[in-house]
Amino acid sequence: MQNAFEILLDRGFVEQCTDEGGLRELLKTPQTIYCGFDPSAKSLHIGNLVPIMALRNFQLAGHKIIVLVGGATGMIGDPSGRSSERDFLDEETLQANLHGQEMQFRKLLDFEGENAAILVNNYDWTKDVSLIDWLRGIGKRVSVNVMISKESVRRRLEDRDQGISYTEFSYQLLQANDFLHLNRTYGCRIQVGASDQWGNITAGSDLIRRDGGDQAYGLTFPLLTDSAGNKYGKSVKGAVMLDPEVTSVWDFYQFLVRTDDAEVIRLLKMFSLMPLEEITELEAKHNENPGARVAHKRLAWEVTAMVHGVDEAERMARGAEAIYAGRLDELDSDLVRQVFSDGPTADIEKGRFAEGVDLVELAAESGLMKSKGEAKRMLSQGALYVNDVRAEDGRLVKTEDILPSGVVILRKGKRDYLIVQPV
Image 1: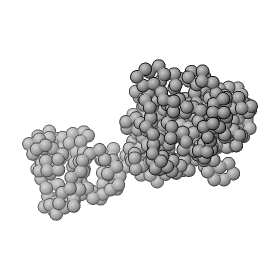
Image 2: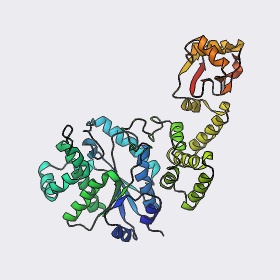
Image 3: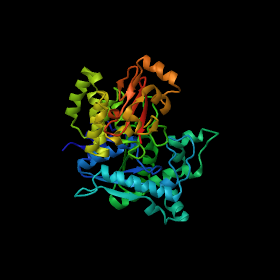
Image 4: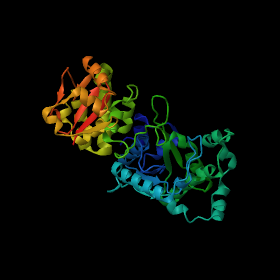
């Protein structure tokens, strides 16, 4: 069987590791690996798929994986990658976040069977530790000189206006203690995480060394960033979440379809379990005809199927094809509302469609246009559409224009949609 380190390297997961040679050797036999997750929102976001898929690859290679949810660390807030202090979460919000993320982990990783993943909450071994025990047991083993040298801390210390509180400064000690606890309890010798976790991870491996344990290792993954270089995360405007109540399945699917050409193959390797040979074939097709977006569509299907199920992935793919071909009659009512969620809606009395409603009047009344004059002008210019079909002068919107989904879609120009709801 291929070494798990080689698998991750081939798929683009490896950013840094504390001892590459030692880690490769260690992974020749089954090991226990853990990754922690920040419960600052009730849903994981698409950037979290990087460590989750790395854990999945470890699990498939025969290693035991531990998913740690931060019931304790979530009360503090990780300063890594932050330029300002986090707000504290109240208990109710924190518990809701932990529950929401746990449901998603159980869907994406295997928690049953012979090599079942383990889910732990660091609040369980942190809540009863007294301050005296903490200072004597952990504080004594950690050098402040090393703590302030960590990039996440040093950057904040250099910012005179913001600085860093003692609370957030102490965060790396909590995470280091998690690694120590899991090392003692489960024999865990490997911690993985995003590259901004490097300082926290090495603090843990150093604490294990000072405690007299076997050598522990750290491995980090590249951060997923957008085209502007911004980290995908819960605090970034427009972040794509795994919860369909936060980010609709359609928006999730379309986000992946719109992946930059330069990124699509990299994400296929990381976000899917497709054989690399098959991805290489897709890459050749993509390079031959980028406009066909075969790699983008496959990425969107694979990730949507994994997160939301195969049926939803199929429905989104069919919906996308129908919209591209102008076949809005093939969309169900739920998908219509997802697709046109950014546009306004207008309720119009259903009986009026029996005789037909003048399109100019309907466009103005519904709010698609500011006035009948504007509507007439747009219609004469060929820029007014009913159910994605260009309208002509004198167009009446009738009962037969109501789609099977129960609505009529009006469009002005290329992108301004409005949903008319006959009531």
